Image (cartoon, rainbow, N blue to C red; front, side, top):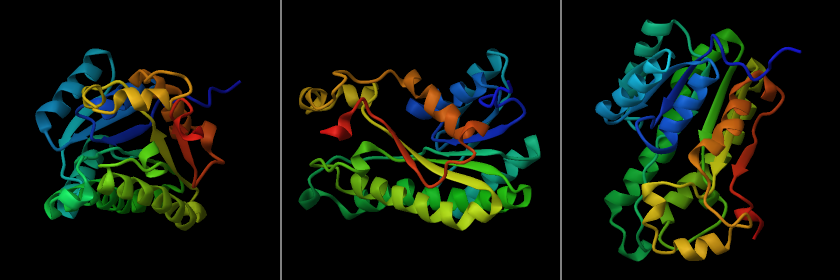
Length: 249
């Protein structure tokens, strides 16, 4: 039987690939056979992930990008095409967060979260659209969050941006379906990270996770490969949550 999860020969662009889940997803896709464009606002971090992939026998380049800036995004795509000549998979992962009560939040903090988390996905998707349309195929995976579906205090702009990503995913799926392009969203729950280790409400959050624990980053592997591969060719406009049951409560 053909291995429909094999990504050999594919080129995947991962934004926010310099750290956290983005770095893990870049490595996962490389292990599945894809060539990886590691894009990050901090080039040194992207270089580290690129080097790790290459040392492991994979193919990768690193690119510095500000996903909220159209010219920077266009330059990222140009560098991708210069190196690999094509693109097959876009992982819109770059994101920021400011935790603060809405009444105390600075306008600049709100704007930054929306600019990166939402506008960034729009700009990156718009930039790859012509490539995928010409090929009549492509995979777009937008990273949302359980917080896009479940409200929590101090997550105002983050929650708003991630909820918007879910709706934007549906709209783009409708618009790009005639070109055989799959557009889906992946919604991680609480994964082990330095950011989540410092949560003031970590204990109360753990009580709301039916599986009783935070996930290891590598537990995204099956989902990200599925959405990036031929296995999901008839899936579009969907949001797949990987949350240990968090949203069941």
